[in-house]
Length: 543
Figure 1 (cartoon, rainbow, N blue to C red):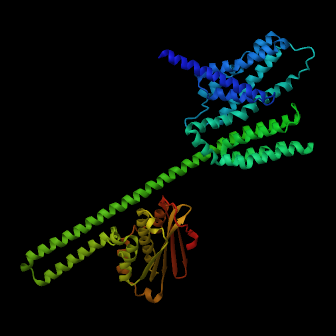
Figure 2 (figure 1 turned 30 degrees about the vertical axis):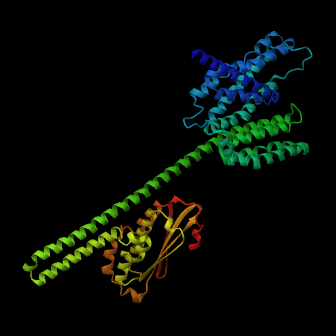
Figure 3 (figure 1 turned 45 degrees about the horizontal axis):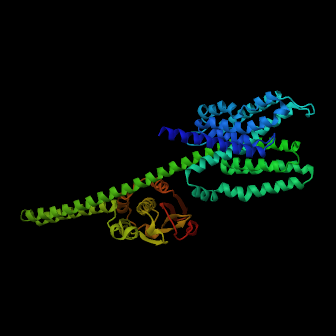
């Protein structure tokens, strides 16, 4: 078993070394002094590959370096050939380890700290630039070799290291974060639906291709302007999609600048690359900050939704408790009625007729009071006809009719029956609260309740409109003294504050208007349950 384990381990090490060597050689063919793509592969491997495979990375980079050392030995001497065998990836390992372990490049949530990433990129670029310079100083240059301008050469190397890393590493990090989360087919399907992918295909690539074409055919005074304009897509993607957008846009812009290069060491291309490198660095930081703010806002929305869901469940639980209390009162009323009948039957021969009638009236009044309390806690008609029956024939309609106030209620919309029970009960409570508030001013002689329902943007909604109007002749005949005490037992007594609070629990709002002798209260509620395939009905249609 141990031999098998060791064999598999050596095989994995060899596979990592060979894969890294192949990728290094391929990217080196596309690189030059101020655009070193293989540096991005090198840094990406240091940041993502487990530590146990780091020796394989050193071996994998040593293989192409050994070939380079042998090929250039006659030209640059044995000292240069020995120094070039030192893998630059080994020199940057302490920096990568520091950023991964001490500076926490990857947070606990799996996100990337862009500040640490850019710091790591800057430090390894400096290390590798100094390494290249030291190796070059040890070279024995041929007599006919062109004169070297070390400041310019060092600047090119640093730019090549830094821009090469920024071109490759952020994309590698995106792939690292997204690929392990799902199978390959699911990842491809999700990628095709990604807004970032669609923006890159539909806007980024066409705009950069147009700028590349313009830089190639435009006169010299517009060529540099076209290169500088390539930073606009990077900024736009960073604003829309955070650091991932900046990474995709930066890679595309870096490639586009190189495509416009007329010569290997063109000064205008160098200036444009410096500008693009600065833009990518800035947008990565800015995009990471934007992403953090968006995540914080999303967490706030999630917490708000969780709080609303808890409040909505509490509303339903409270209504269930009221229903149980109503049933208990109804049972108590029946028990009182039975007990009274038995008691009067036994004492009838001992009581005068007048006392018996008085006791009977008191018993009937107590039973009616208990019935009213039970009906106000949970309407009896609700059990048979639901919300429609409770609003049209419930205790509110009876109280208003007995007091001399005209009352009627109508319903419209096809989504009322699909609303959750909590919304139905809330509409009933809100109608009682709103009617009581209007009647408390003693300014209404007729009340019209309208309930509208529909669906908008996948959410079912219900609108409750209470219209109150007062006529002088009818207001004088309303029995307020008998009505108001009984209405207050149906509600919390908090008026508009209670209406606002109940509406907010269901993500709704309240609007009240008064015109002359008329008053109107309009309340909109959203069903917490998602709607699918319902009739599309706009809220504005009922305003």
